[in-house]
Length: 405
Image 1: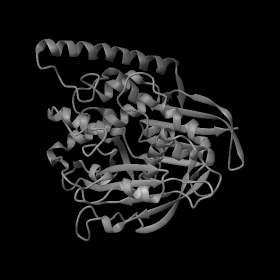
Image 2 (image 1 turned 120 degrees about the vertical axis):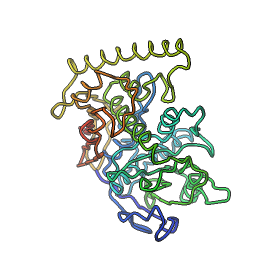
Image 3 (image 1 turned 180 degrees about the vertical axis):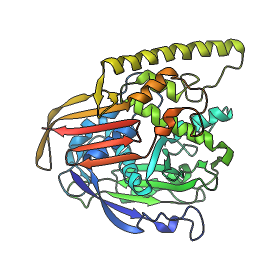
């Protein structure tokens, strides 16, 4: 199940010869096209919309795999069916946001060889906590909004990515991308609220997906790299904080998807319920905080023990859950019927055993640390073939999806 996607990259927005970041050799300036695997795209949307740090059961990962399965039009170009195109404004906004994240990040995973992708807001919250900052630029909206994602590639370079999606046409998509200014607007004003030191700086991208309806000319992914203003600057000696935030974000999302809700919170927010929580300022406050995290760690250990002993085993020594979702009606894709979706998210058992020993790790989970599971977070691989797709994150996590008749 493949769909064609038009890609338009404005190379003139990069800084120029001899300046950083340089235009990526894997990018093609101007207009080109690529082929997207539909199950892989749905996997990526579901993965990215799963919260890193939250309490309670989340069904967000199933949203993409079930609801959007019927949204893909039959034509070769990536487009929406007329029924999904005619949704009310609120539902269209949700769909546009989800596709506007999943499609660009899936494309960038291949082009930039990304290893880790973490939410920009969580990334900033963890760094603020580690630096002892009381108020960081972690707004959800407006000019101080953090970028959607921070990502690290196989070479250790860090990329800042802002994603936009719309069904309102190419002109509105360009407006979302923003203008250089002054003043800067749209994605331009948001995408580099974080600046990495020399030797760590990757791409600074704003990606806009203009989603078309069936019968049209197909969806277009537009990518630019305009100059940002007033970034939050990270120094070289603070890069271990960046690595800690990325490692925790990736591990927590994998745990949450595989059914380890309490354990995910312990990993993402080691000092309390929120990523930015710190040790108590008084001995009394610290004792109360410690009691809460110790009780949570015990629930985490019980959660891991239960799934290891009674849960399902996948692909060797991975533990997780299998979800079989029966569709409310049969969906036909590429002439083949789909009546149910089978999803298998799972985490490496050795990683689970290590986390069970110490769920809330209060030291930095960076590469130089003593936390062994961090060394297992390798490159994220997406493989799609026919009606199936698989996502792997190093050797810590595996996620499979099968569309079945």
